[in-house]
Image 1 (cartoon, rainbow, N blue to C red):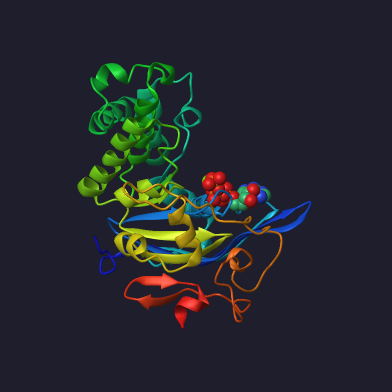
Image 2 (cartoon, rainbow, N blue to C red):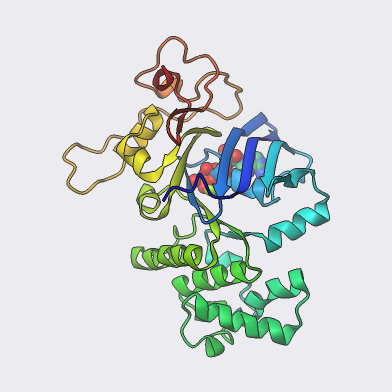
Length: 325
Ligand SMILES: Nc1ncnc2c1ncn2[C@@H]1O[C@H](COP(=O)(O)OP(=O)(O)OP(=O)(O)O)[C@@H](O)[C@H]1O
Ligand SMILES: [Mg+2]
């Protein structure tokens, strides 16, 4: 589904995140740009440690408050820079209109509070809804995300739920304030494949029913192929390629994306799986040129120059200079 013509909800511009550590300055996110449109599912993929969660957590205001965390750039929500707003307004926006689902449903739920109360809590905190009404709304929402007998189940504690049901409860709680954006960081990694498929279906239904836009962070390209409209591939803190999902899988341009796709099993493909040789760079160095150059089989003169994302086909952006010629 092409969403470029629909309304831009979130526009991340030249986002940079640095952490001051004992080993030096870690450049975790190095100039990330992307736009999330109404009703779009945008996948953010890349190897472990490439900066996916830091990007998401910065959008959610969970990074950047401490002295050793430094943020530059803009995060525009409906054309207004969230980062320039007073702290109180930022908090409200991020609870009400931008919501988050984390990877591990067990640690996101308090084990000693009934599920119905926890799901309703969001309304009590953000909209000052009275307890009884919040409980009622929570039961309704639990039903909508597919929890059977929600009135009874709301009385349960998290340990009485299965892993898949806990993740549904988390999703229910993240939807209580009718957010426009849902940020899901590896929402299915801790679940087995059948439950994973059900949760992904649920996310797609929510997009249909509420028009919610989803930023889906995953390292699973199979998940991306199934549910995303657009994919952004991250490498060492930068987006190196961004394209509609079919285009990216059919014609990957960046050597890193091509390498990633060779690492996943595709039914019917005869060639062997090929891991990408070498290691991602240390994020303490501030390299100017292409971050992937030391591992790239096509590295050539010019790759030490700054690598900038350019649109080389309609809606297909790539930072590889060789692809831009
Ligand atoms: N608060 C912090 N202080 C210092 N370094 C941090 C902090 N948070 C994250 N990092 C570092 O930033 C880099 C990017 O981390 P991030 O969690 O975004 O990776 P990721 O792409 O989400 O990986 P994964 O797929 O394993 O979840 C990592 O090297 C990580 O160690
Ligand atoms: Mg992560």
